Length: 244
Image (cartoon, rainbow, N blue to C red; front, side, top):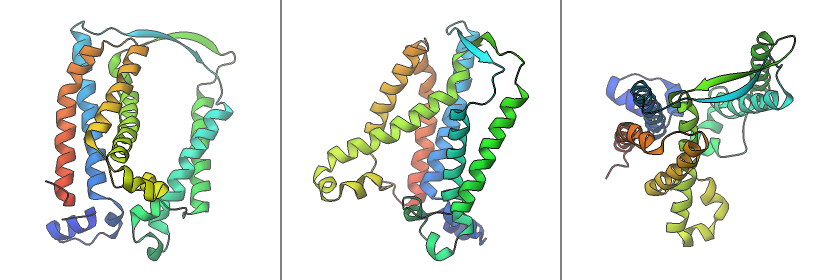
């Protein structure tokens, strides 16, 4: 139906917003499903914390240190990728970015945009840490409730979910994979739902065990989040024309 939001908005609302052609319809709903799932999970974990079913953990954190080289490099890298690829979609010639998915997975990009955004991200991180800097760094104990870790849980689920979905799709289509392995791996197409579910569940189980979060209570809290996220994701399938 609508490969990207440009066609959806043009057909439904009769508006011609060119930048929307860079937003893949299915990808948009997948991102929305993760956001709504994370919000729901946080609310459920907070509720269980108030009921006394989940307890916080204490970790030792050194506060007052300036930004490390590693932190600055990681922030620069994140900014560079966003500038080199995402920002480039809006500033490069349309003939190059006409197919956003192909552009994202190609080696093309905008170096100046990447460097500028990378420096900006690194600068923001340096400024943030510099404002918190103390004459002498201190070791403090900080309490973390399970709902404080929802951001990390969501990232773990996203990374291992995508890896699992791609891995199981490769297993299911082994002969096609052997024909062009590199193209198949980096193709945005070909994702198996249960592969993502299995790998994400295993990764979250390991994460919960590491941070002493009751796994069964976490499962219970995740149930409504998963239902909501899956429903929104399936809407994305229908909007993109991949529904069955």
